[in-house]
Length: 182
Image (cartoon, rainbow, N blue to C red; front, side, top):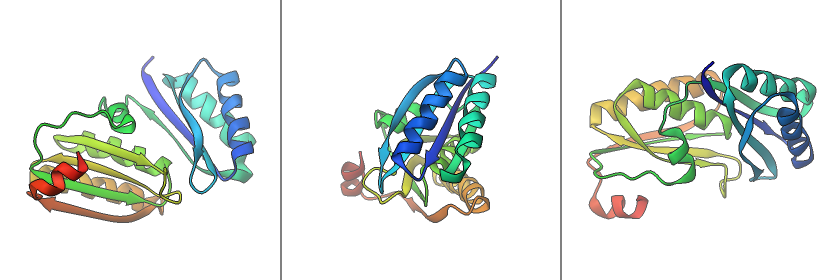
């Protein structure tokens, strides 16, 4: 069995909390994060064995489908996902800066996972709908070509889901900008 993460995102807090409770009652999973995000939506991120995470996300998504915004299950997520979610990534140097923004919370984590698996990049931060009216963004760094490839792959994924908002790659950002971000 492999390690996995999953997420549900709901339109309302009441349904979100109830759905998160359903997830932990359905399978042996751990709650990584469960909280209200702007604008009054609710997200819950869980981890555990792949089969348990799939069952939990499916149970909550099916039972409360009328309030569901988005969900996902990632088997074998990139190891840099959690430090980026918690804002604890240690970045030594920034050669290029990639930014990708989505309309929802769930899509940004999937985008970050595919970006980190596409090229040699470091995830700097995943801002998940906090203070952003429900939108989310990620910041990543690496060599210019790697950042471009990672952002393009993430852009394609979020675009297929209808959640892509905007993206940019800055080659060799100014030190003042780097200090402001890090």
